[in-house]
Amino acid sequence: MGAAAIVVEAKEAGGHLGTDIALRDLFPEIRKVVKKVPLIAAGGIVNGTEMAEMMDKYGADGVQVATRFVMTKECSVSDTFKQAMLNATKDDVTLIHSPVGLPGRALKTPFVRRMIDKEDLKTKECQYKCLKKCDHFYCISDRLIKACDGDFENGLFFTGENVYKIKDILTVKEVFDQFVSEAEAVYKEPNAPYRS
Ligand SMILES: Cc1cc2nc3c(=O)[nH]c(=O)nc-3n(C[C@H](O)[C@H](O)[C@H](O)COP(=O)(O)O)c2cc1C
Image (cartoon, rainbow, N blue to C red; front, side, top):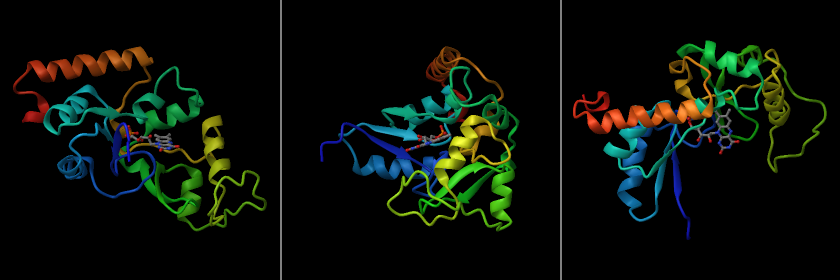
């Protein structure tokens, strides 16, 4: 239908998810059938080694990265959001039900714990009317805005699965520099980590 590129977003991604298949299983299946349109790999890529792996070994034309860039100085979310990500362990990331009708990947913060405990979180009035179909289980817009604004208790903090691997808040330039130098190291080194 004339798409300029296609993003293959796997289950490691943050936010709403369209699949439960891991990137390294999903990507090759799509690459097999999509030959001419550039394919961009997304979900769980947090460094240049993984970027090089997706491009060099799996034949991706590019990568889409979100979580690493939320954890940058320039990102406009609150410091609370960035600190929550920085402190996250593997077990702090979970799947949640979203009123959009899809599963979502988020940090296990107090609001998510209340959801897990089946507390009634329904908002009385719909302010945004953002969805054609909403089960009104809770207000997704309200909770995402709260997270952005730094309300740790009540916000919904979307994150990718591999957030626990990121140990610092950098500038965007530092992230790019790191990605480039890590990727270059892979290309120069026949025994690069992903090749082992
Ligand atoms: C905080 C956050 C918010 C996101 N919001 C959206 C969104 O509104 N729409 C969308 O298509 N993808 C959204 N995503 C998914 C990203 O676009 C991206 O494909 C995915 O998270 C990549 O995986 P990574 O976060 O592990 O790098 C979001 C991701 C994060 C972490």
